[in-house]
Every structure is written in C-alpha cells, then in structure tokens.
Image 1 (tube, rainbow, N blue to C red):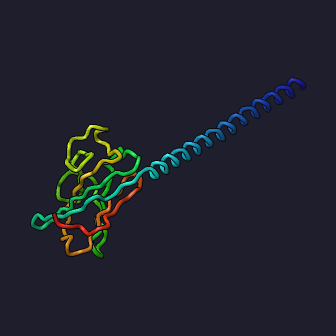
Image 2 (cartoon, rainbow, N blue to C red):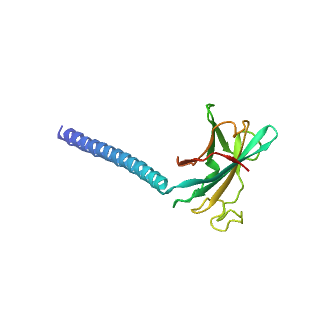
Image 3 (cartoon, helix red, strand yellow):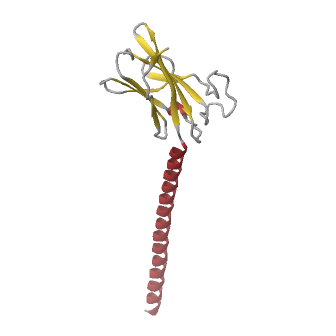
Length: 176
C-alpha cells in the first residue's frame, strides 16, 4: 500500500511540473508575440515620422477625350521608400467621388505610373543611389489619366504611400 502512495505522489509531482512548464511556456510565447507586435508598431510609427513628401508640380494636358495629369513629388524626409510600387494616387474632381488609381503601366485606364527613375534633379538623369527606391531629396515623376477636364472642376491629386503618409496638391493644376 505504501508503494501505491509513493507512485501516486510521484505522478502528481510529474503532472504538476508538466503543467507548470506548459503554463510558463505559453506565457513566455504570448509575451514574445506582444513584444514583437509592439516593436513592429514602433518601427512603423518611426518610419511615418521620418517620412515627408511634398507635391512639387502638378500639370495637365489633353489627348482628345482624356486628360493626363503629370505630377512631381519630392521626398523631403529622411525615409527611403522601398516599395514604391505599392504607392497609390487618388484624384478628387469637384463633387464627384474620389477615384483611386493603383500603380501600373501607362494604359490610360485606372492606373498611374512613374517613369521608373527617381532623380536628384528635374533633368531626369539616371539614378545612381539605391536604384528602384525613392531616396530622400529625390523626385518622383508620375502620370495619371482622367476623363474630366481638370480646368473645369476643382481637381486635386493625392499621392498615398504604403506607410499611410499622403500629400495633396495645394495649388490649382495648370496646363502644360
């Protein structure tokens, strides 16, 4: 009988150790997930704080029934924009619903595109620093096609970065 009591106590101790291991392990794993999430959130917030873009120029031209808006945006912050292909453009024309344009090819459809080079100056010389990324003090040249004459409505172009930062033209879009 005494042997059964010793075996019962030993099994209880083993179960207690296993249970403590499982509880402590799950608490540590949960805290690790929370810490990683907080780090990601802080990194994202830091990236947004270091991002600053300015609409340098916004002009329109006509192609029979469609109008093309050419815009130039300056990255005047400290953040390198690595995933520029995920940048979107929103065009707001008068009281019409805003239209979102995803990045794509020059199809004269619901896409906008950039010319593939981010330049240190307006002369469009080839990029040498971090090719394919939008570095600080570089310009992004973009183009979007719309179906309404921008001179007859109050038209605004808004560039939306993947990290949530935006810039909107504050001046009227001029022909050119």
